[in-house]
Amino acid sequence: DLVLLDIMMPKLNGLDVLKRIRLRHKSLPVFMLSGYADEKRFKAALRHKASGFIIKSEGLQKQLRTIQAVLSIATRYRS
Image (cartoon, rainbow, N blue to C red; front, side):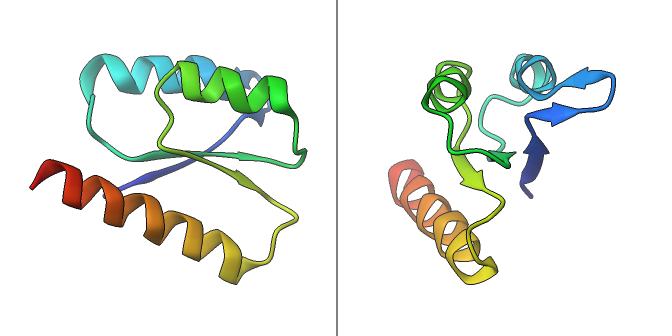
């Protein structure tokens, strides 16, 4: 299981949702999505324990490679 969570959503702040997820599911992989390569948002996501940060404009293949790489590292770390 994993969560793909947009940082900017109507009526919701993705970082607030991430905080709520982390209260109940500390090890669930959560990848933050953004339309912008914004360092401030990236750092905020990492501070709140996002597993990764994906830029929407990156191609699907690059997005999938990012997810696979992070999940692979997490699996090795847990073993």
